[in-house]
Length: 291
Image (cartoon, rainbow, N blue to C red; front, side, top):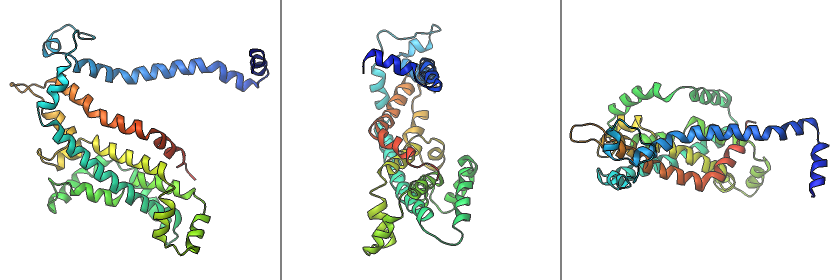
């Protein structure tokens, strides 16, 4: 299309289209400002991670230290068993993510495709559970697990994974409700059971929502600080808890440059997970719209 044609097409476009085209530079400018504001805390964290203790304790603020103290990253992983706690976090997040992904899908399939008395009431209970903040049930949950002897173990996360998550169940329910009914009818004619239909038909077609649910569950456990701090011991705790307690000097004051360096290393796995899963992650939200 030539330049003349483009001008004629734009000039002859409806008024609403012309207004949108003129608004694009303003929109991009607003998005750029928001992006810079969101990246500013991470930039300050990186600058802190590259400073020496003397630069942090001095009264003069240094925007970018020269030369940067890259050795802070090596010291951050040797000051305490960094990779041991990282392995604990990875194991716990993966275990909880896999269990929550499967069992939430099973419950979501039941809400979306099965009929039975009280299903609407139970779905209403599920929605109401999404409105309850997790911090409200934290102390009763601790007392329950302490009474049955599960404090200091990973069993609470196993039980939470088997129980599923209300929000993840809701996502699955919305996704499964949008699939055509003919899939189940064809599977039934071929002699497939309900569970077989779920495993052989619905699960293979649910890659976007499965990736989305797993990423949400994995990052939720990886980034959680309060629950591991309350339920786990220091030897089997997660990296999120270890970062807040393991970097202190001889006087007991925090080593902020090492904490910042370790925090950057702490978020790297989440960035990698999102980069690999971003296409399916976005598609999962796009295909789980409200019906």
